[in-house]
Length: 92
Image 1 (cartoon, rainbow, N blue to C red):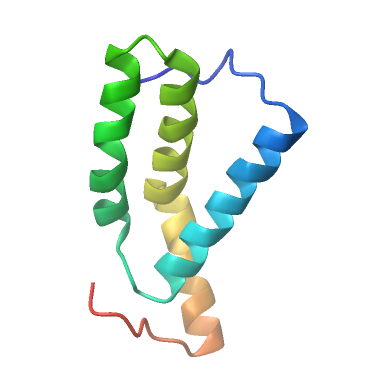
Image 2 (cartoon, helix red, strand yellow):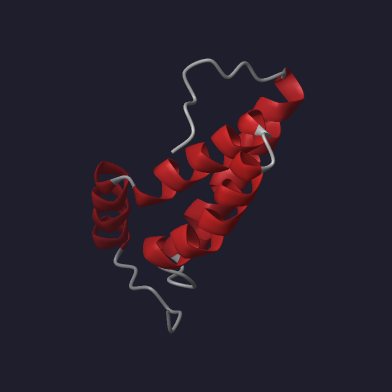
């Protein structure tokens, strides 16, 4: 997929990316969606941006995809749910 190693984000872009990541964490913790469902939603955008030559945009969305599907992050989410005694309430 898109190479993020060259990507340089402005402060505003970093803040927006961090905010979207926080929203995804909330959605995942609440069980509204599963990582694979979010990945499925993000993949068309990654492909569309890449086809259009918008490599920076593709890399940003790929960064979100990696964030959502990272197995280590998922384990931390599961651990947090166990510690808090939370079970996902959604039907995803």
